[in-house]
Image 1 (tube, rainbow, N blue to C red):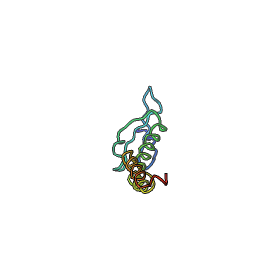
Image 2 (image 1 turned 135 degrees about the vertical axis):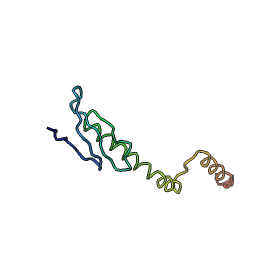
Image 3 (image 1 turned 45 degrees about the vertical axis):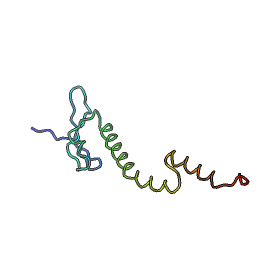
Image 4 (image 1 turned 120 degrees about the horizontal axis):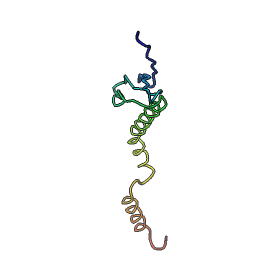
Length: 101
């Protein structure tokens, strides 16, 4: 008689309870969407560990996707490198007459 496998779903990843004698709460990610293929087949000591790793991956992916947008926005407000900052300071100092300093 086959036991019913206990499965969970988190962010479209199917996680199955796969306990061993030593690790009673071990889980294995058995199915994932293409974007998370690296997780397929991975085992974690607990369901919480699997959730944390998936969430970490999603957080990093979100940060990376916004990086170019944020840099573009900041370039209009802040100088992003020291060389440009120094050049701006020199240009400012040479454009002001000695009486205005």
